Length: 143
Image 1: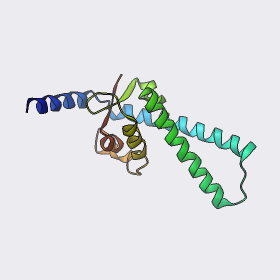
Image 2: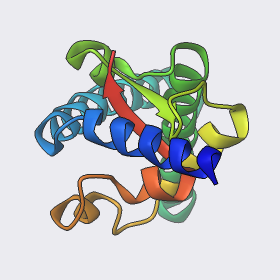
Image 3: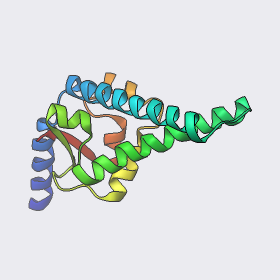
Image 4: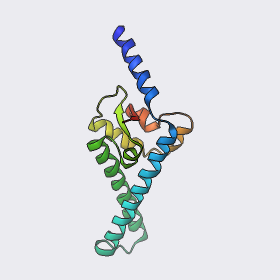
């Protein structure tokens, strides 16, 4: 019973220290801009020197696939190695599990995939935590 109460207190302390939605919005904007720059740069290089398709359907599938792969690599690799993305570096925040510990590779995978749910960005209108935070049991806290 005492252990359960201690865990609830730790969880409440961490929830209070999680960052404000404005900081999360800044993280989102910075990360989206960086991801778009990466996407358009790599797409330009591939289009210019390597890949050219004559079909609109194939070009569409190629573009979506390239964007999705870069998205997964950007968020997955940075959060795996540094526990933060470039937006989080800028705002001096990081990702932890809900107990304040290190996040695992599986947690990062859940978090990254959960970001692809279309309503995730609108979830902040109703909650301080994003949908991807809830589904992966993570928090973004000040570093």
